[in-house]
Every structure is written in structure tokens, then in C-alpha cells.
Length: 203
Length: 203
DNA sequence: AGTATCTCGTACATCAATGTTCGACTTGCG
DNA sequence: CGCAAGTCGAACATTGATGTACGAGATACT
Image 1 (tube, chains in turn orange, brown, green, purple):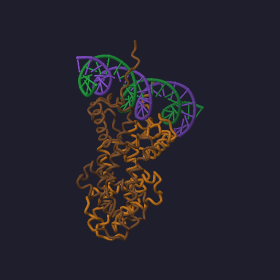
Image 2 (cartoon, protein in one colour):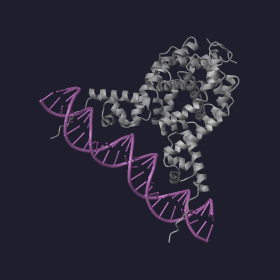
Image 3 (tube, protein in one colour):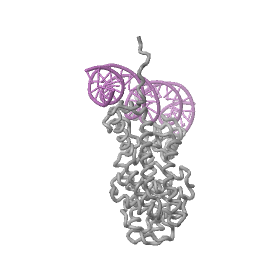
Image 4 (cartoon, chains in turn purple, brown, orange, cyan):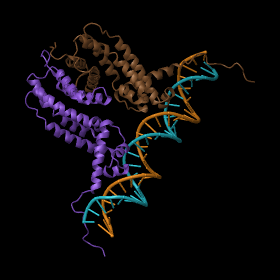
């Protein structure tokens, strides 16, 4: 005799506690590994997470989906961090604040953006990337409008420049050319100078 | 009976004409391909050169040696181009000249530097890279000394910045954000601003 | 305590790229 | 002309990474 009213596993997609912990470990390890080397292997990520490679595949169906999850989390966290920055008041001061927050994120996530570009569908990546850039655009436009920033160069170029300098600083710290502690000041000092309108005097 | 005085192939390590032409084609194609994608496959390079993959391996014993040869040629040519730049006179004007020459090289060789970093023995790459950087150092030091450039930031950082902005411009052109024609002016305008000493007024 | 869930290692299938071998064919060059 | 040199494609071996299958053993949860 078979029991007709068999058990449905409740609403629970709830994993067991150790499984959840492992998923966390994997996400964290993947973030750290991908931030350093966007081409890091799944085996290395598993090792860094202190977990078997098979276990990893039990939770993420492929390398690509793992990368996507990691990127999505990073994006969400970045978006929150940038969203918390006060962009009002003097554009130059606001830029400093935004740069400081962005620098922390760059250090944390480093080359993750490269991994994303390689592993995610192009459209999805574009959407995500544009979302982040848009945090900068309004401030830059305002600063260009009121003479705080030079507007004799395309806005697109200036946005690229911001990205580029942050990335360069990350590389320089990694190579030991500069110390992490002084990086923030260098970034701010450099970009404030680069964005100063021609003919103006800088503090 | 065997002829005792057999033929030695003269001094000639001289390849046949078509072989030399193919080697040229391969080097050129490899340069172009690697400049776009440092991970491009040997098969793609051969195809771009209009040559069979086997033929390529007949002339270069491995992908690594091919990359090395290509990089060496690029370095040599870059070194000549930069060596021809007049670095005397006003440091800011000299910087403009050096930037223009460097921008041409960056466009030509693009991501080749990345391929080099991945395929060449670390020491060799370092040597080559430092050789190029040293083209910049004396000018920067002179400019910092006479007040043309700011010296409140590490020289290393400023050199990294130069590289970074050139690279960023290359990427921006590739993505269509800016036109190649205007890139040179943007690079110069940006870096001159970034290197202007605090408190000075820029033209 | 009992059981479904989870972990782990090993082993295997697959895939893409590198590098090699072979034999037939073409071509530069003496 | 004639041959050494060069080219070509197809087939093969190898390597490294991804992803799967299995089964024994550990552990969270009820």
C-alpha cells in the first residue's frame, strides 16, 4: 500500500546549514580569486573556498553561472555603496567622496569586471555596466555645467578616464609601486587636476 | 662508393624567397591579431596570414616563440620611434611630442603588451618593459625639477598614469566612444592637466 | 536515532588549443 | 630541367580546463 498523500517538501527551497555556508564560502572565494585573475580556474576557486570541485558544481551549474552570480552580488553591493554617497554640494567635493567610495570597490573587486565581460552574455554585461556608469554621469554633467569641471572634452572620455585611473591605481598597488594608503589621495589629486577647466587655478 | 667530400650548404641559412615572405606575413598578421586580442589562437593567426597552421609551426617552434619574436620586433620599432623624438626644450612641449609618438605606437600595438606579459618569461618581459619606461623617466624628472610638472606625487605613479591614459584612449577608440582623430588631443589635454603643479594656471 | 541531504575523491567524457607526423603536391632556384 | 625546399590539409597525440557519474562516508535536521 502506498500513501497517496505524500509529503511535499513544504515551500522550502531551504538548503541545509552547511550547504549554505559552503555557498557563501564559494561566492567569497570566487570574488577574491576573480578580482585578482579573471581567468582563474574553477578548481582554484574551489580550493580557495576549502571545498571540493564537485561540491562547487553541486551548487553552481557552470563556471559561467558562478561568475554571473558573483558579479550580480558585487554589482548590487557596489550600487548600494555608491548610492549612499552624498553627491550634492560642491561638485569637486562630491567627486572626492565618490572617488573614495569607488576606490574601495575597485580594490575589493578589481578584475572582476573583466571576468564579467568574458563570461556574461554581452547584453547583460552592458546593462549592468551602464547602470554603474550612470552613478557618475549626473555629477559630471552638473560639474561641467557650473564650471567646476572642464567641458572641452567629451563626457564619455572623462568617464573612461575615471575608470582608467582607478584601475591603474589598483594595478600600481598590486605591483607595489605605491602603497594602498596613499592611493586614494593620488587618485583624487590626479583626477581633480585632470578635470580642472583650462585657465582656472587649482588649490 | 660514397662521395667523401660531400656538400655543405654554404654559409647559407638563407631561406627561400616564398618562405621569407610567409614569415613576414605571419609576423604582420600576428602583430595585428595580438594587438586586438592577446589570447588569439595560432590557427587564427595563420588564417589571417593566409597560411596553413603547419607552415606557421615550420617557422616558429611554438606560440610562445612567435609571440616573443613579434614583441621583440615591436619593441625595437617602438624604441626607434621614441628615440627619434626630440625631448629637449620646454618639458611640456616635449611631453606633447612624446605622447603623440606613443599614441601612434599604442594604436599599432594595443594589447600586444598583454600578450607579452602572458607568453614571455617574466624577467625578459620586465627588462623590455623597463627599457621602454626609461624613455619617459628623464623627461619627467627634468620637468619635475624645473617646476613644469608637479612633483607632489611619486614619479612611479605618474609613469603608470601615462601608460594608463594611453591604454584607455585605445580602448575608447575601439569601443567607438571617441574618434581616433581626436584621441591625440584628448590624451595631451588630459595629461598636461594632470601633471600641472598645484597652484599653477594652465594655458 | 534515523534519514535525507550534503561532501568528497576518483574516474570519466568532452572540448578547445597546441604541437607533431605524414604524404602528396607546388615552387623557387641553380 | 630537376631537385631541394616549402606548403598544405588531414590525422593524431597531448595538455588543461570544464562538466558528469558514482559510491562511500559524514552531518544537519526532525
